Length: 592
Image (cartoon, rainbow, N blue to C red):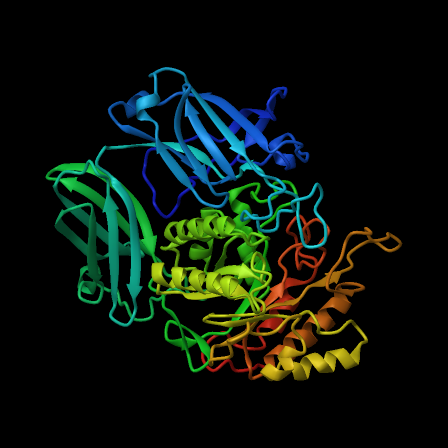
């Protein structure tokens, strides 16, 4: 059962999980089943484990509110429900939500009866609608090619917590490593007293680096904490070099209290990292140093849980295994990941390109739904230092005519500026792969590195990735949309590889539907191909980072470095030796 605290970057002491066994109905006149929340009914871990015949789902359960929470407001939280839902408490509608990737909450206090409470969640997931953000979920019965099994309904944690009518709604941290400050913005609830105090305690490795109480009025406030000026509070603390990075994931712990005189209305435990990402001279800089990104394409799927990891530790272990292979981050693909994953990326030191699930067919209605949910993603994940880039559309999905269609070009540009307008501290890619309009990174996809033995294509790849003209021959579509051209951005290969490794016992035939972009007969053959591929990329002065496809096998896709149970298929130490040939930081020196 998934019973870890579901929001680790905004922690209150009192809470209660509502994960576990619920009653479940599919369709209007269905028999009652039992489902294990938060696993979707299509997954084995849900206890149902089959494709659905109806797009209408119903969840029900009973719960009780602890007596100690009397006189508090009771907030009911959902991590994510795919796609539209309405929530009913004791027969009364508490609220509705649309969007399969983002969290929502309702104040259910007025609907409670004080004894056993009844909770009902009605979900509609349009299984065949190509205009809604759906990512890698196939809109037909069975996954095939690059599409996977659908995930319908509740797929992240359900939980509740008590709050005072006066409480903190959200808090954002914007670090400035050049000034040694962090800007803290926040919003309090409408019932907060007209005059109140915000008390902050910022700590690093147990030592206090900032303590302050500010007198505030109004629902929104801003505090700038000067960590340099307050470093004397921590005795031996030295700020210099305490920046967050994959090599040194330093985090600052924060306690925030909403006070009214001696009365503490709310207390939040959170954290932030002092981290800067920017582009300069055609390179990506992390904390004012050039940084070579060695990423893995991460779909975020599990054999038994589909889009939901079986346990919290699975998120952490994926990151540990990726780092053990010499990768310093991931490009999340067509999925807004669970906050638990982002927490572990923060803690362990792992760059993340946050992604949004694409829609497939362009309509103004689909574009509106995408934009609304994308804004919610940025707000939810703003504080995570691991996130260095907002990555929206992929390979012109949802905007198939973007090359020469002005409306679709305007949409992509609008998404770029939306992300920049909501968060100007991170890099942004509107369309990843080809046909780019406005991007902070020129992000190209190519799998034309050549099959084993195809020396001609291998040489074409080696030479092609040394110039934009050469890349144009390796990428499936035009590098830039009509009217747009290269403007000096860093150039990265954000999908390469995809090599299927044959790990089957001798004599066992492959599944007819399994595939990779190219193949290797065994682990030894794979390592030779991989070493040449990465070596060719490292030898190119044009390329300043890559993303290898992919972390794990998923259903018919057998091109993972890990298998479908997320276990190594090849020797991690050998992969690391190959990846470590070029340094991540500084001058990107190559080690022979």
